[in-house]
Length: 92
Image (cartoon, rainbow, N blue to C red; front, side, top):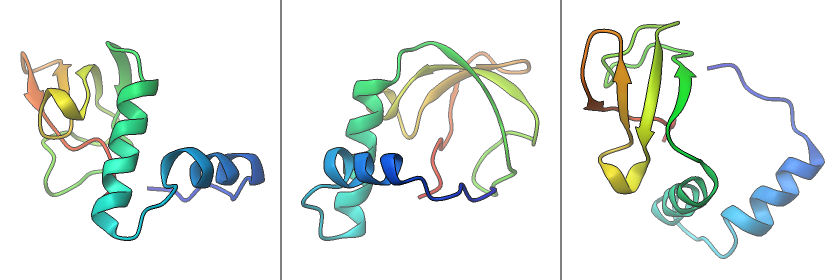
């Protein structure tokens, strides 16, 4: 997945809202999951940007995301060839 350029406002928001007071990678992941569950509104359309060994999605495949981490192991989605499945939606 392409790396984003550092942006001071975004980096400040991440440090102050998402990963404040985290000490381990597990705490960082939990912070991100909680933040995304609070901010994302389901359902929404998404496109796979990169192939991952643990995901059934192909690069460029478009899906409808039905729910977040609290709804399953990563997220629930609806794609062109499946009714519904859980896939990882972050690059942990």
